[in-house]
Length: 317
Image (cartoon, rainbow, N blue to C red; front, side, top):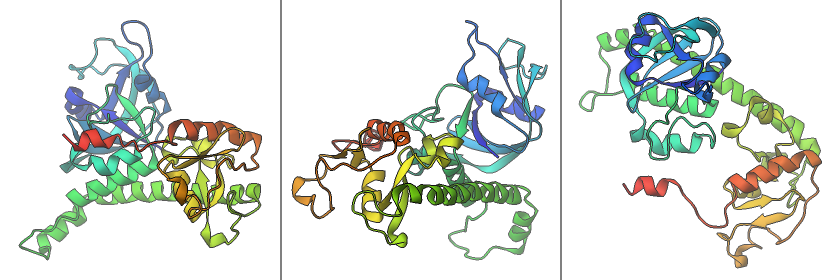
């Protein structure tokens, strides 16, 4: 099961009425944009979030694998090109849409660096279909549940019988529950396998301080789940074994390793605090050749010598 976010705008109502999404194969220049070509990755059982003018307005389940097809005649607001990709869906429209900008503080940390559906200002990116990693999917499902299922009247703490029956009849409830359960199961299974395969590569101890108490050890990814392919998420060389202290530093980009295994410490940490964090400048750990590409990615994309928070500009608006 995979999740996607489809950016529809003016095409939403027509596509919903036809129970499909559709995109051309090529643009006017003969190129195949990634967000159109991605429809070929959609298979029966996958789930989609539908984004329209700043809001998640519906979710859907894919009924059949993507296929090449002419544009349905009912899609009048779509591209003039007729050859394209078609996916058949079952739509579930939300009673209360989820506004992305209102919840962007929660959504932003879960966006991948590449092919993110939303820009840093919370607006949608141009394009049609974007991947949605499991962590982002779970967050969107939580927001949908909070606004559509678990609202409580400020002056009435108990639901009336009619309200309870309405929720029980709502077919969206079991659908959302099933998607969330599948996404959490995929993450849990992936994390367990990743840890099991990674630990012996580091002799069951922290790569920096050699702590070997299992309860204090974390399998730390160099390339986060949100940015990794399915294969990279399970690759035990995509990370290292660290104690809870060093795991937090690595996750936040306060320390990193280069392709030779040499430790780099962010200037955010003052030198007088190195001993407190058990950090030794220019320390070098033993690495595996397969670690290099992941360490370099982490150092280039996560590690920072100064505090940089891309949300500062958004918060100040």
